[in-house]
Image 1 (cartoon, one colour):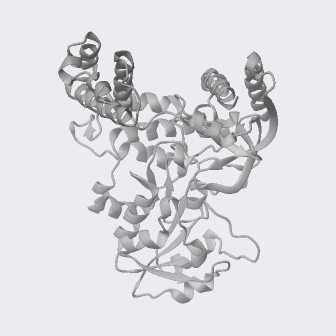
Image 2 (cartoon, helix red, strand yellow):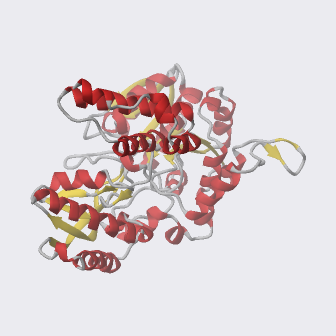
Image 3 (cartoon, helix red, strand yellow):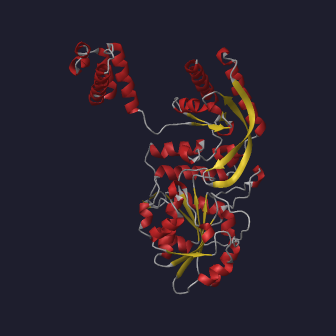
Length: 466
């Protein structure tokens, strides 16, 4: 063992090699030094358990691999073959090319983020998206914050702090990450008043809870990420609006996912649009920018100008404000709606409206490309009927028909793991013991990369199973 340990080079000697010097020029001396010490420690541990000292070539390769891993960003692009369009764990909505370009432009140059070019004085960052939101939805005013939870907190804090907020028990939603509407409301300083039951709530329940001295707001929360079926009753939004106006209270609706387009033409259940909620009389409507809207992460607040003015003046808005790249991406996304190009430009809507026959052709193309490899001649590859989902807390229980490529192997979990470790990683879904690849959520320009990765991983998987 001592003889093997003496074969390991010292740190100073390693720095004298041309290979290490080249690595130091790329990554800097400190990172290379840390990598050398780490790999020498690994080598010593291996020697103590009876393994020989690594060769100089092997040691240099290990150092280079460690450096590559150290500088690789942990946040990286992924091929989403799951069929979940708005996949929360995979970054939710993809941005359109127009939105990506807009972000690049404002990130790489100075901009008029808070500067009024007309009069040459300080302006407001909120104007860049507000006018478009108002034009598209009919709202009197609009403001954008960091996400929908932030939008709810800001609205409740500014309009109902230390006052009662009435909400149905059937609308006490828990959103992603275990965050719950009651907890968010508590942070705003508003006092939650639950009415009705989990499955049935009537207008009279709200009315009986109204205290003219202490009630500050009536809150409706759309079931955007769950369903209550069977023996159920919930008042229509217009009924709550009429009640709130009778008692001179603002009515706020949290739409959650939010959409500007009707979902029914694509075989999905109707999802309330922001325009519909405002037309029904809601005084404040909040929604996400990165779900069915198909834009960047943001919280949209729309409604009455006098109420929005209070929100804009509240100190909390600075803690929740969005940056220039978010505003640029949101503005670009909204312009696609204004020009009636959402179905063409915005990836979420392109995926929702994708033709099943085209999806089938892509899956068949994937299968044929894999079949060309002789080592996969006996592999079980089939194009099967399956279902895509919208995801992201939108349209719960709703699916879209799709044609997926199904691969059957003895150890499907192991294959899925190997694909997750590919570059770029591929995430598929396991269904009925098979690994399914849904073309609905794989971008067409990713097809060749996906095929290349599948060929390599499947060949390696077959070799390791022999």
